[in-house]
Amino acid sequence: GSRWSAQAPVHGQTEDADEDDDEDDYEEGVGTAQETPRSRQQRPAALPVVVVAGKAMPKGQDLPAPPAASLLSMDERLAQGKLIFLFMLQDGLPHADLWKAFFAGAPRSSFRAFAHCSKPEPCRQSKAFAELGIELVRSVPSKWCSDLVSPSWQLLDTALRADEGGSKGEPQKFVLVSDSTLPVQTMSRMRQVLLKTDHSDLCISPRNEWAAVSIFGITYSIVKHHQWAVLNREDAEAFAKAWPMSSSYSSLWKNGVLDLAAGDYKWNLPRMGPDGKANLSATIARSLIPAPGRCPDEEAFTSLIFGLHEGGTDAMWQNIIDRSVCRTYVNWNCKNPPEVFSKMTDKLRELMRDTSEKAYLFARKFKKDASLKELKAFHQKASSELV
Image (cartoon, rainbow, N blue to C red; front, side):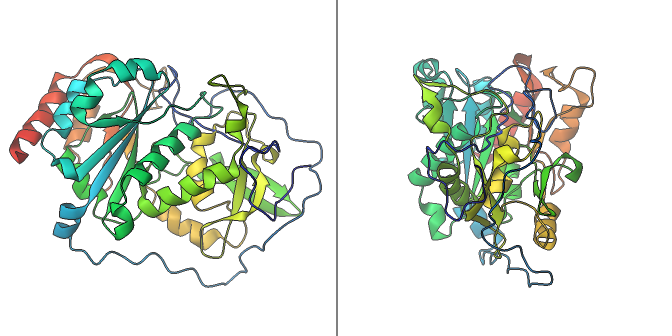
C-alpha cells in the first residue's frame, strides 16, 4: 500500500500520489487559490500502516542559515540580472501588442521568454512569438486540475537548461504568467522590484486552506499557494529536479492526452529536511491527504521546494510565510468570481500607480478582446523613456 518511502519514488511509478494543479487560463472560468467543486476524494476509513523514514525536526533545533545575500550592489543587480518570463498558453498570446509595448524598452539581454502552448500548432504559425523573442517549448499533455504542473515544469526545465548565467551568480527570477494575465507595472519597475532580493515570491494561502492529515498523532499539512509564482534560480532548480522524481503523470499520457480525472493524485509529497528544504527521500503519497477540490498547481511549489509542514518545522515555515508576497492580482470578491476585465477600471489604474515593495506586478483575468488602450499607452510611454 501507499507509505512513507525511504527512497525517492521513480518517475513513472504506479503508486497513488497526488497532483493537484490549477492553471487558470488553460480552461475558461478557472481561477487560482479558490476552492471550487471538483472530484472529491473520500477520506479512507483507516489509513494504511505507515513506515516513517526520517525524523521530524527536534524542537529547539537551530534554524538553517538563510542563503547568503548577494554582495552585488543594486546597480550591479540591475545591470547583470535577468527576468525569465514563462507563459502558459492555449493557442496563442492574447494582447501581443501590449506585451510588445511592455518589452520594447528593455535591453534584449535583460530578459528571456518561453511559452508552453496546450495547442501548439497555432502557436507555431503565429508571428507574435518570433517578434517578441518568445521561444516555444515542447508541449506536454495537460489537463485542468489534473496536471498543469507538468507544463510549468517543462517551461522551467527548458529555461534553466537554456540559460546557465544564473548558476554563475547572476541574479535571475523565473516568472510564471497565464494567458489571461497582463503586466500592470512597467518592465523597468518590475526589474527593480524582483531583482532587489534573492528570494522567491510565493503567494501563500491562509492556514485554514491547507490540506492536512494526522498520522500517528502527527499532523502533516500541504502549504497551499497561488500558482502564478516568481521563483529564484535555486528554487526553480529544486522544483525542476523534484517533479520528475515525485510524479508519475507522464506514464498516463496516451496519444498526447492525459487520461486522469481531477482529484486523482499521482505524485508524492516530501517532508521538510533539517535544512528547511524538501527531503526527496522521505515522502508520502499525495492521495493519502484528503483535499476535495484541490489542484496540484496550488501545492507543487511549496511542497517540492520546501516540503510538508509538520511539528518542529513551524519556525522555518514562518520565515517562508513572512516573505510571502502576491504578485498577480485577481479579484474573488465579486458577483461571479473571479472578475474578468473587459476594459480599464479604477482598480487597474490603482494597481498601475502602486509603487510599494509588495505591489502587484500583474493582473488577471483579462478577456481576449478587452479594450486596453490606456494600459498599452502606459507601457509605450515607459518604454520610449528607456530608449
